[in-house]
Amino acid sequence: MDESDGAQPHEQLLSDQQDGNFAPIPFQNTWGLLFFELNLKNITPKWALRALAIMLCLLNITIQVLFLYIVRFKMVEFSEDETVFDLEWWVRAPCLFMFFMAMILSAKHGWLLSMSICFCRGRESWPGQPPMPFEKLRNKWFCFFCASVPEMLLWMYTIWIGTAFLTLSKSAEEIMLNSLALVFINEVDEAIFKAATPAMIINLWHVLEVDKYWLSAGSKVETATLSYKEVALMAFEMALLVPGALLVAMLISVYPEYLFEA
Image: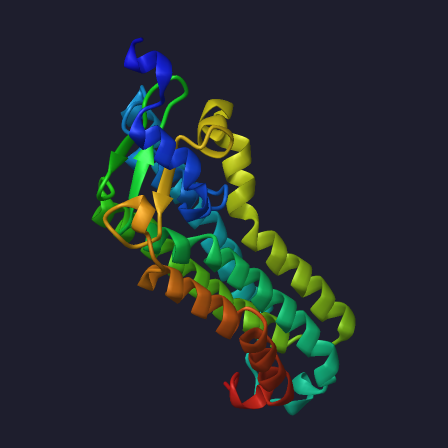
């Protein structure tokens, strides 16, 4: 009997049996699209798709920075007037908390995950073909500095502007509307991705999962153990996801005048 008729390749068996060791797939946004396009090897037209991903990332940066500029210089007024902070802390705290939770979730499945994946092993697997494992990510430094770092900087700027925007709200109605505005700004990235990304790419990425990455340590999948990347992600979740966000929201709500003075 031919070997190809009797058994799957060894790499295919490993990939089928060890799916639990794979990292989660990054969010469907323009940064994740750039990350995916830069590391996908067997696809054409490769350079046209990469150019599309870069163009969408630049468009996303332009629109989000423009919105945040409008918020910072047209809507947020830094003032020494203490009446700005008359809004009860228990009204301000839940809005800040949910804003921080949304931003932490964005980081967890966005730049934090992509930074970890930059230094991971992985495999590219197409239907009907044996998987092609790789020990290091292609273009990892380019991905790190041109995809992960810009996303992190934009995330940090959004945190700063959004915190001031919510803290300096003068009424319950205003802070609720401001919260919705920040959610809208944070989702601009995903809206651009869904509107401009070809359906073929979305299917390859999130349905067929052509590219996958291992966060686990070890030279073989059978002996994979918890790596420092997984420990860092777990610490981020445990320390910041709920208690950290709640603590910061409470402190800013109770003592806002110490953070946003003229």
